[in-house]
Image (cartoon, rainbow, N blue to C red):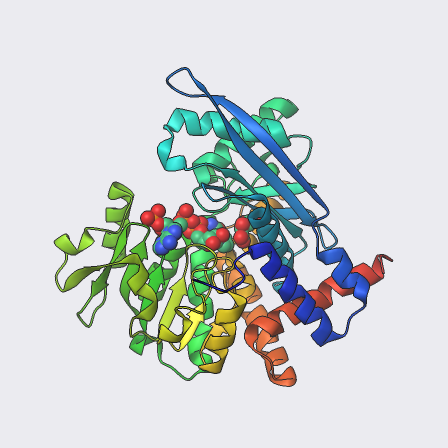
Length: 422
Ligand SMILES: NC(=O)C1=CN([C@@H]2O[C@H](COP(=O)(O)OP(=O)(O)OC[C@H]3O[C@@H](n4cnc5c(N)ncnc54)[C@H](OP(=O)(O)O)[C@@H]3O)[C@@H](O)[C@H]2O)C=CC1
Ligand SMILES: O=C(O)CCC(=O)C(=O)O
């Protein structure tokens, strides 16, 4: 029986409460940020391929636009619910303010297992979602993007449907679009790239050499795969990867060949079975990933995977949270006591929204940057945020998560003050 608080919205409210107390800010800061500004909950009926009609539950939550338009992804998953969407939207507000980009926080989702839908059903569902939120979102109001089980193709359908209703092309309505229709170079790998960059900076902080690092990755979707690839390109060895159906572990000194694993995943939709095609590789259970003997652990799947029940098994020196909310509050305490360095989600996975911001800026200018420009601007923003968080960590003798929240809440408070809201 797990006694951890597993409600992500309660978790983020607790995180906010703690940081407001640590900073000693006005009660109004907590009162304004502890609930979203607006949340839309709706039904999306769609015609299935067999002629029947099914109704899906959809959400879009606008947590705060005090520092800019609401911004955040849309998740398609069978566990999507109101409190999860509210939590993810709230984390977005803190995330954009850690990296200092001019956005607020939002998030959306549909309660659906997209793997059970045909491509045509998925397209109708996506277009139905846009019909439901059309009057709620806008390129200067609330800008969706990809999250779990959504991708460039889905963003293209969203942009197309919004533009059809508007009567003209509105590329800046979503980010994470294919480059052919106004997407930014580098957006697809950006979250994983940023996670890898944060792992590199965390290793440097502990005086560890990248070449000596053994890395494990939970989740091999957009974030996990590009984090693994980037770390391998930087010289680290990725020795284990898992997904929902199981995973793989590599015994040799070189680690997994991530490019081949990505090609395998693209074809099969799972990492399971890759061991049959690779030397020195075994299959492992999904749950085995956390306790492996590695230097760096990258949780890149879902919330609440590191709990008080498994935190003491973790042997990594560094955890870089690619996923949003992978660590419960109770587990965080155990990991801190063990002296594990955690780069928190609101910093670690901010590379995605940062390049989304670049995409939106490029859409507004109608002028597009090279990949090198995108990556160099991303590196500047993320390494600056990492250093600012470390500075607060040192001055206040707190962990990196608390420091990241302190940096973010201070910035939001400043905006509230200047705008005359408090
Ligand atoms: N996409 C983005 O730009 C951003 C995403 N994030 C966060 O990163 C996380 C991952 O998102 P993303 O990569 O986009 O999502 P994807 O849908 O691309 O991939 C999700 C991955 O997680 C795996 N997974 C799900 N549940 C489990 C589990 N219990 N154990 C092991 N693996 C599991 C899936 O396995 P399988 O392969 O078997 O389906 C899949 O590989 C989420 O928390 C998301 O909110 C954060 C910032 C930006
Ligand atoms: O790219 C974006 O706008 C948001 C990505 C996202 O949903 C996240 O950072 O969790």
